[in-house]
Amino acid sequence: MSQMKDLPSDANLGHVFQRFPKGVDHLLKYHDAVLRGPSEFTIGERELIAAYVSSLNSCYYCAGVHSVIAETFGIEVETFQMLIENPDTDTFSSKLSPILNYLRKLTLNPSKMLHEDAEAVRTVGWSEDALFEAISVCALFSFMHRIVEGSGLNTSTEARTATRERHRNGKSDTPYTDFGKRLGIIDLRAKRNRSPLESTAITYAFPSHPDSEASLRRLALAN
Image 1: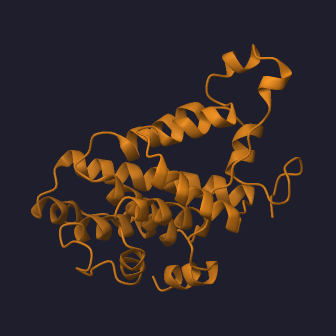
Image 2: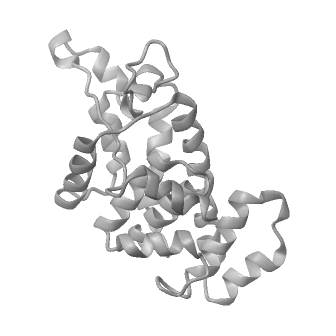
């Protein structure tokens, strides 16, 4: 249930961003830069990292959203579940395992990071840029988890289906910026110049993973 008195009890991230738009345009553009910009990681791998960090933070809302998106970019649901249960597994990619181990430690024990942790990432062939990109995804979602959980956000079955279909049928280079435009948050100056009929608010709900929240909780608590 939403923690904000002037938001609906079933508020989603779209409601929060519309009610509190300060800085959201830059935040969504940063999402696109980190998750869709040029990278050594595929889009699917970056969305997988987002879902993985979300599960470590027990943010089932974000874990559900980004595991669904990762799936549309070639990551199998079973792979995500196995990586949650055992980040050292080779079921996804032996090259990705050191990255996941690094991010697991960064998320759960950030003050205990060692040079050896970064060296394990470099040893399998990732560059300094790739390491920092992974760190950036981790940092971004640790931030987003506080927005989501602090605001008390919810989701719906309908939203799950909508997100899956949207990402399957219309893969954009800037999906997060597009989201902000649909909400009327990006290009607010143009919005202010529209007539009232043209300024109708757009609501949007990020979905959960098709599996139940209980399943995601179980996977997260296993860590």
